[in-house]
Every structure is written in structure tokens, then in C-alpha cells.
Length: 439
Image 1 (cartoon, rainbow, N blue to C red):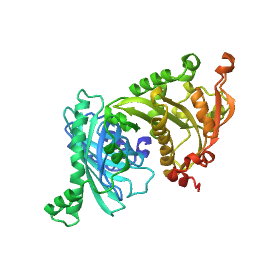
Image 2: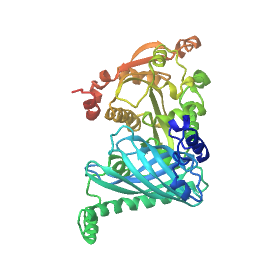
Image 3: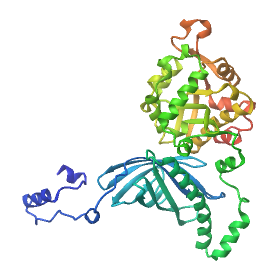
Image 4: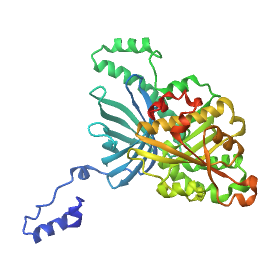
């Protein structure tokens, strides 16, 4: 009875016994599962994947979206989450009411913050290449055009032997899909196919592209780049490997005798934090090598108070210590780390990574998530000077560091973001100042 109340499937024999006990016909509660009966076998798809699809937004060309996919499977049922890295945002979507029949996946992806029909898409994909490659189509309703839109969708299993080769192939296919997407939209609007081809050729490269795509087109192979989780999707690097590099970078940047294991933490500890909060960190890369990064988190009030008093050990932070980011609100943020190799700590190189902090602040504001206060431990003389320049005030010292000598004490610095944005050097940050209603 409890399984029936929960809407779960029950073995037909038990249902017939229930019907007999209740004085009903034997098959009163039996409903044949046509989908299950039609399936001769079910492929195993559980695990982590990387995916691609194409979408468009008003005023820009179509662009390829990369995503991290986590699938959970029980028999023929499939559920999971998609973290999509778009030029304007990072969004999380969920796989619901999805089935696997033989080697075919069909179901629904939903973005929880949107009200249907917005944020709903139907997916059909076929597994091949040893079940390490899913390929098919996604269809969704676009409120901007008031039409159904469709895109090819390719997903690659992360731990498969040919992962990097498959990812390169998938990217090539999806770049072609961008052109097909544009042609298909023109043809659907009534243009002759030949005319549609001529139109796309005539305006190729003359329309405004999405910011991230435009930026990468302009950058040469030696340019410094600011990247988020899309770096992992592009390079095939795992979160564990990422954290190993970031820990190494921390050792290159800070005094190891001061830092210690209590403050540094471990790869195993930080990997789920980075995975669960993709808007809260960015990397500075050159030729795919990580040369810097920053990481901040909106902590829950009790943990934030510990940070203000200099009592917080970074090694104790877990995803459960982070304030919920699924609803609009105001938060205090703890800057866990900003580490940059020495040669990139000045001039345009450092401005690039500092600008990326405010780009993230702007993305958060677009989700109605606002930064009130920023607190950080100033481990280095450079970070102290930067704090002074940006109007941070000393509010405490990191517990235990003063005992190592006056010059070893690590100050805890804090400021109100709005006060910082009012400084003259932020006059050029017009969009983020506007988001915080600063004139």
C-alpha cells in the first residue's frame, strides 16, 4: 500500500492479491507497462558526460553550448542534471520523466526556475560506439520567437578511452550545426533553400556574436583567457585534476609554512564545492595551462561570522556551508583564494582576472543574487595592498598566525561591495554598477 501511495510500480502478483483482499476483479489495479514490455534490453548510461547543443538569443548568432551531464539510472528509468555553460550565464537543468528503451533515450529536460512551457525541452538520443556516444535532437519552445526550436545534441561519456577524440569530433559537428541552425530557421520562415544559403554567406561574420564567442575569435593562441567550467569540458580535465593544479598554484603563491594543511584543504574536499557552485570560480589560462584563479563563496551566516572573526579554516568548508543560491537574495561572500603566477600579477594580465570577478558578480545579479559584503584573509603583501586600494578595512587577524611573529599575522579584510563600486577606478564597470543601482 505504501508503494501504491508513492506512485511506484508493484509486481502484478501482489496487485492481484490486493484486489482479491479488497473484493475487486483480479486485474483491477494492473496496468501493463507498454514501454517496459517493448524493451528487449536497456543500455547502461549512468555516470558523467560532456554534451553540446546549439541555441540562440535575441540579437546574436547561434552558438554552441557546452554542458556537464550527470546521469543516474535505475532499470529503464533515467534522471540527472545538466550544467550548461552559455555566453551569458551558467544554468542548471534537470532530466525528468526519461526512459531508456534498448539503446534509445527519450524524455524531458526542465529548468526549475522557469515556468512551463519556458524551460522545457524534449530529448531523443541514440547510444552508439560502445554506449559512449549519445546523439540525437532536443526540441523546445522559444518565447522570443514564439516557435518550437530544435538542435542536434551530442553527449560523450567522460571516462571512455576515446573521450578526447570524441570531444574533438563532437565540436566539429556542432560548429557545422550552427550554420544548419541558421539555414533551418530561414527555410522554416519561407525562404527558398538556395536563397537562405546565399543570405547566410552574405552576412557571415557581420552580425554581433555572443560575447564569449567574439572574445575567443579575437584572441590568438598565446592570449590569456578567463574560463570557467567550460575549460573542463573543452580539455577533458576532471575536477580532481583541476584541484590538484590549483593546490599546486597555491603553494607557488603563498608561504607554505604559514598556509599549512589546516588552511589549504584537500582535493577531495574542494572538488564537490567547485562542481556544485560553477558561478563562484574562474581560471586564468594560457595555451590551456592554468596560470591563475580565484574562488569565492556565499557562506551561511554562522560560517561567515567565523570568517569575520578569523576563526574559519578553509579546510573545513563543504557544499553544506554555502548559502542556498536557488532563490533571489543578498549574501556575504568569502573570497577563498586568488592565486596568480608571479609574471601575471601586474598590468593587463592581472586586470583580466580582476575584471572576471566583477563579470561573475554581474551574472549573479542577473539571477537576482547580490553581493553585500566581501571578506578575505590577506595572506600576501600584494593582497594587503590591493585590499587597501579597494577600500577594504581590517576587522580581525587569522587565528594562530600572529603567534608566528608580527610580520606573519594574516589580517582579515572586509568591505561593502557598493562602497567599492563607488570608487573612481570602477567608473568603467557600467553594467555591474547599474545592476547595483549605482549612478
